[in-house]
Image 1 (cartoon, helix red, strand yellow):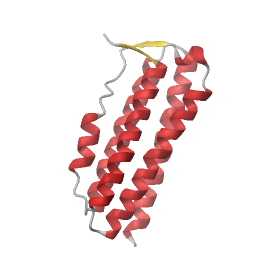
Image 2 (cartoon, helix red, strand yellow; image 1 turned 135 degrees about the horizontal axis):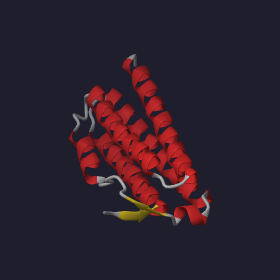
Image 3 (cartoon, one colour; image 1 turned 180 degrees about the horizontal axis):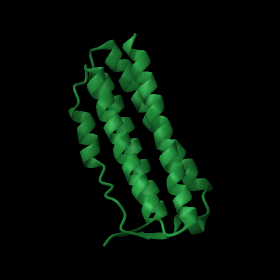
Image 4 (cartoon, helix red, strand yellow; image 1 turned 135 degrees about the vertical axis):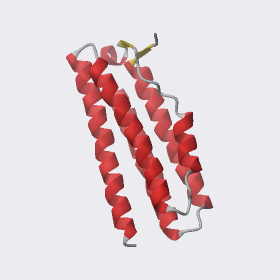
Length: 151
């Protein structure tokens, strides 16, 4: 049985977004396709936005909420997610987008599980809010990928 605070969970996910942002920026330097370079630049900015949003959330949230301990938290190991992004074919925009959307879907599942297991209404609202943030960003990513298709 694993226990972590809400703050720990938010921090781990923020660090994941930071790591993904750095990974996309590195991959952007290696891509030879202009479309892929544009998408990787977008993804690096996308992940930076999410990391910044989580950092602001952490700063603005009530200390008592952040220090609430949760039991049975979902697995949050970032390594396989970053590796999945790293393994994508850099010059295949669809493969890069698919890897990014898979990461987003994993995080959405984490937030859904947190919402289901939250012991209080306030924590359920927080998990739902984070889920909405991730969902909105995934939709923005899908729209950007669609627009890039015509580029």
